Image (cartoon, rainbow, N blue to C red; front, side):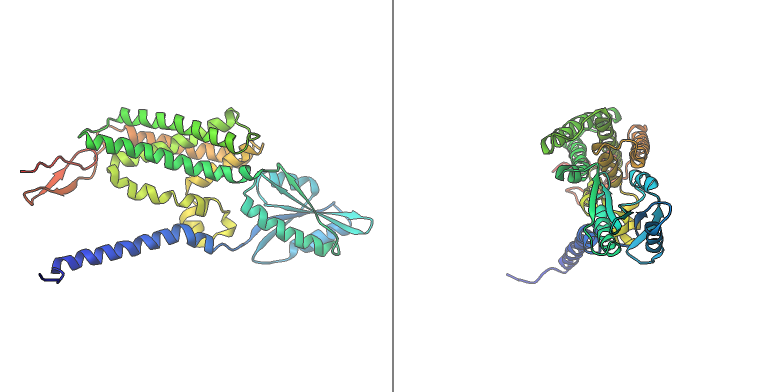
Length: 353
């Protein structure tokens, strides 16, 4: 018995080896690489003080400092609240005159991404201690968030994606096995059904993780809109590509914890431009965080509504457009000849003779 590998098998060996290397590159880029390259760069913070006096002079000097990690903005005590509410800064250092000199207080918000808030709080505390001659720096948190309140927005966004993806893939797979082509209305019904059910599951998890989190119509409506948009997007791609779309949709799930949980000022510029700039997870995460922490009029809520509303509309057009062509898949029958499929998912029934 010969132990030699047939000449044609070397091609398969090379392809298999290259496939493993490519998967490692993709996973490393989407997951560990984003986290390993985290470094603060121009994190926006503010220093606030009265209109005149030594505290104002200290605030202006601090804001005039240049550096790579922080981007300072000098403002008034009243204006600083608006900056935090609109999420234009991750924290504020308030300087006020006191009996023993300048009194420093750091103000952060639980409605802002905790990654950016943590970096800002540490930097502002150190700056406040230097300006107050080592006196303790008070830290005030507006809209304080529990552990669940900090992690739940990203968690439910990722669960919405994977739940809707499994639902859409199950319909495609079952239809393929039955030798049928799902109609556009069948896919629409599936998108509606999985959106309702997944939204209910996510609401249940929010209540389970922290019973104090608000679950009003604004929260539930935002959850349903974002879930429906993701389900329709996946359904449209599955209609166009069949199960081959899973090769695109599944890796996108990895972007959620690795990229969407960070703020752009902490990401490497490459990740910021290639992934963070367009991923829908960041819109659902930040919008939901504002709603859960009692700031429904924050700008990212309206931004999320527009993004997911537009995504839902475009995806429904793809899902319902009549006669949408699917790229044929060439299969090899038992006779050794290639058979071209024009079914919805590139699948043909090949008999055995």
